[in-house]
Length: 98
Ligand SMILES: [Zn+2]
Image 1 (cartoon, protein in one colour):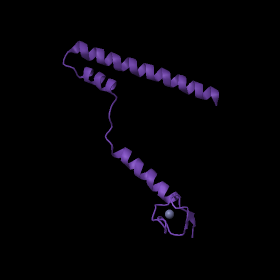
Image 2 (spheres, rainbow, N blue to C red):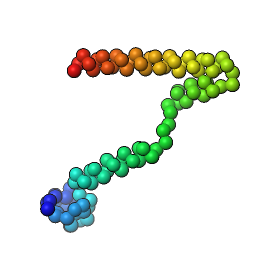
Image 3 (tube, rainbow, N blue to C red):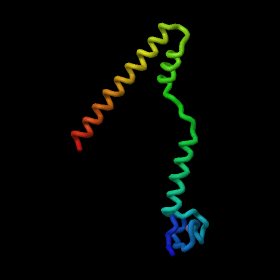
Image 4 (cartoon, rainbow, N blue to C red):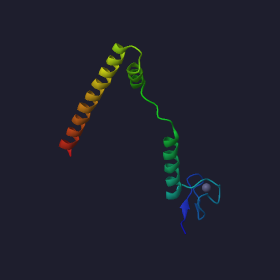
């Protein structure tokens, strides 16, 4: 049996998960695990939203004019290459620092 000090009334309580004096939810490992699991499930349930710039580039790729489509593909490719180079530099800095 665990004896836990309540953060609200500062009394020691033997009952879990609620304080036997003020009925406050006690902060235990189990309640923390439940909070993390609930937060994780909420984040998974949220629909994935693209960045507005990425949304605009994808809209350009599906545009009815061929020239605009090509510009969209070019911008997407440039973004991919820049992201790859920055990722490589970040990895290099982390590898050197470690
Ligand atoms: Zn209490």
